[in-house]
Image (cartoon, rainbow, N blue to C red):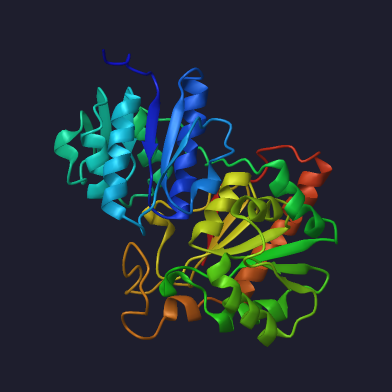
Length: 360
């Protein structure tokens, strides 16, 4: 005799860290609109720590893409079908997650029209890049096609262990964080540009360099070459959520168009997002209460050169990065200092400085 159909929802996002962080906005939305509905979340192996302690996630399913990729996909399908979800929603446009959704057995199977398995969905929506539509809004429309509310930020919940890991670094005076790396070369502000910033930053600030284990060497090199006192390389030493907890207490966080920017959004950390080859109009911009975008003054005919980054500049000049001026980054710090002072005087009340402002 088959088991009764569950009311549970499965969300699928097996792409990069930033994509999972942005998808977390759906968890708060579901908790607010359907507080009694259990929600499970499928991620790629390596990203599970973001959601395993999330208060609105029942179970985290993990797909190991590097070991027995397709065998693991088949086992996941069996697990999904056995759970008998009422809704399965894939936030991706790729065949693998479309396959899981289309053959999940759920009465509601939802995704984007560009997915190769969209023919097996009960509802498929367009995924339109541009026009200033944020990815969070695109994802929310999968849950509710009629949604016309605000672009709600993603939200993550550092655990007490994460908070404790960050705590020793938050009590040594005012500090800034720099996450200098990116998976994509053309999304990464160059080392020589970060060195200019480090040389120009006021010396009352301690500076923490952040990143994952693959970023340790690049951060160590930046630390060595800068020869600036009071710079600490924390790359590879803090978990993602511990890094988020540290960034939340910074006067300002300098980040690329990459995962650390979305970490800032998820904990409301003050953000200066440096955009090189990509543009906020794609819909992946910062959503912190205090967030500013810095990009090359005047623009370039070749920018943006693609939705994602490249391993090298297609025209071999990378002017979208080298044309950004240190004074632009310092101007954001001056704003952030005023914002921090105003927030402190108002008892850190919410909603005082919001919206993403482009400094170009």
